[in-house]
Amino acid sequence: MNIQILGPELQGKEEFDGGKIMAQKPLGFSGQGAATVRLGPLFYWAWGRAEKAGGIGFHPHQGFEILSYGIAGHGFHRDTLGTESTLQAGDIQLMQAGSGMQHAESVEAGFESFQIWLEPYLNEAVRREPTYLLFKHEEFPQTDQEGVKVKTILGEGSPISQLVADARMLDVEVEAGATYVHRLLPNRTFAGLAIRGTGGSFLIAGQGPVPFVNKDFAIVQTEQADDVIIRSADETLRIFLIEVPTEVDYPLYNKAR
Image (cartoon, rainbow, N blue to C red; front, side):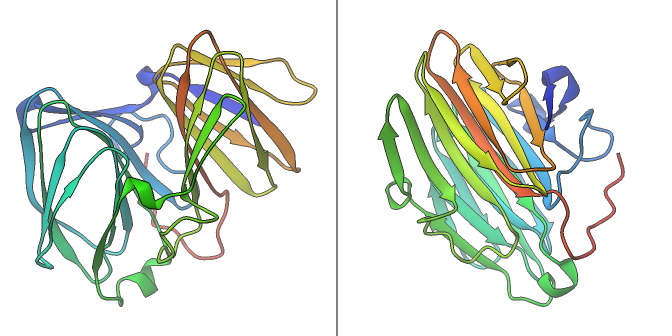
């Protein structure tokens, strides 16, 4: 099993609306500074935070499946499908861009979110009608056992059944001294971004602990089934996890570094 830990200096960066909105990008576009630009169908991952109220005007998307996950504050969405909606903490909005749509975003000061792009088979995706859906925090399955809280965003029990790309997403909180165990199968890539707490470590059978700290991006891959154990440090750790296939059976967009 292979584990990479990429600090913020190895992730991309971008600012919007004159620096009112700042984004750290574990996976970004070419030239934005990210050491890794894609993981299988996981095409883009931005962690945005707004110091001041700001926005991004109408801009186009096509083909990709784009999820926005509210972490704090309020964000506001408009699109050419006629949608107007508000994204709050814990909510997910899903745009399946299909044959093409445009949207605009505005945020209040203190807003924080992830925007994540997944790539289905684009030759088929661009033939589909574009859609927008908003899912509220309370719709998602959540568990709280032995110091570990898990919210399933994509996976068993999730209300998001429309997604074409293969992915699991989890929002996990691990109390100090507790552990979270994730079973990783071959041809699967497991990625995590630590967003709260001082950090923790990854533990793999037969290997020593691999430490990480807040804002680090972790990538885990294996050639055989194994357990990935995440242990918090000295305070509650919040880590956002995504699992995707390492390889897919359709051609992927050529995303240059």
